[in-house]
Image (cartoon, rainbow, N blue to C red; front, side, top):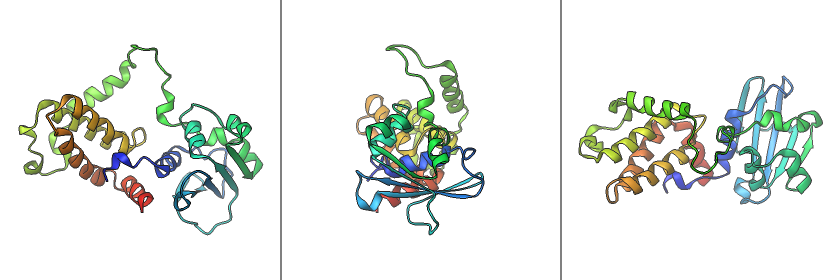
Length: 232
């Protein structure tokens, strides 16, 4: 199954792990267990182990005492992470319960933070994104050599691809290489495939999907491994 279809609990936990701010958490080994009430039993339990500046994500019990339990619905936690709601509101709604260390529970909104996607304010219809975002993407892709695709030229046949398909590939490759904290792998692939469907050759999106799957496994191996584990 293509990675773009595997948007799941693991991606939410992976993103939270990468962006967690350990400053409000005691400077010792501190274990936070997440229990999701509305997902299959095999995917309901996750652990964040925080030791100083190091944050590890575990999908099986690490064997340490738990300092804080976060019991939630996946929808509620995703809404908090994306900035569409907040911790206090979900506690009042009964979709989030915090059990354990009271100081860390009270500061959850601070140490959890927000998804990078939630940091850009919503725009009115037709309003353009900030020029800085466009500049980074355009100049980064222009400077990206074809060799950075890390796929044999005979397999890619870039010269024979339509310019639109080739540019979609280059944009996705740039995001895989240089935006690991902002754009998860399934999002990169999904955006590229949808662009290829609209602007590329007939059925070209299938070729783009296959190549980008292989690129993701090479350029974001650790993240891809987490997504694969969540499907087993």
